[in-house]
Image (cartoon, rainbow, N blue to C red):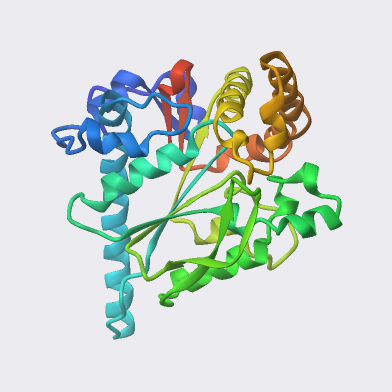
Amino acid sequence: MNPEYTLPTTEKFSPFLTFNRQQWAELRKSVPLKLTEQDLQPLRGFNEELSLDEVSTIYLPLTRLINYYIEENLRRQTVMNRFLGRNNENVPYIISIAGSVSVGKSTSARILQSLLSNWPEPRKVDLITTDGFLYPLEKLKRDNLLNKKGFPVSYDTPKLIKFLADVKSGKPNVKVPIYSHLTYDIIPNQFTLVDRPDILILEGLNVLQKGSQRTRQTFVSDFVDFSIYVDADEELLREWYIRRFLKFRQSAFSNPDSYFKHYAKLSEQEAIETATQIWNSINGLNLKQNILPTRERANLILRKGEDHAVEEVKLRK
């Protein structure tokens, strides 16, 4: 902790420490930025202008913090193994990244994967999204859940929990179904393999969900070592979603194999109205009902302002 950082009065009664952009950047210390502009290009989101300054200001201090947590976790594992008289392999460290549609979770996940893979030493860092655990389109249609896609009810949560349990237990070559944003569906008989990574990053809308409060129920968060929530005002989220929808209309939606190919024929005004309606009836509703209520469960909150720049960081005490 920066010795010059003092708690505001309101923070003394909060479970979080709050940092503005400059205060957080100072916690980078002397950590070098090894990424180049060329390295950054494939990490950028479809609708985001990510800069090297954003990486060095926000993500380098965050990676430094996570590395401390990982080191502490490894020490605890060593103590446990010594106590039990065993020499087991290290348990994968799981990081979850939650937040609304269009907030930039995927970009944050890719940046962390890149930074953690090579610092302080080469490590195997796998990135998985919860999209692969959505129910197939046919089942969503059959159960009248198409307008609830992305809501907790649209995920095969037992399968996701089984996946996390297998990864934590050190099982090799754990299969993850592959989701296609083009066809809006799970690709049959195609899988990504997760083979005993040092770190697993799990990115998704509802990874902080607790579900119902039934006794003995297992939650996704039970397997997570460090959780991040990417936050922004709903007005910005809606604006980013509409902007992304308009870009997709000119690119992915024009693909004849796209599930949303009918949107390619919309005029710009029609596209804006359609995106707004989708936001209000599905994504915004999911945000208010299911995603935003989980924000305070995170270990760290990245709050974004205009242009996806992080303006404030909240770290659980």
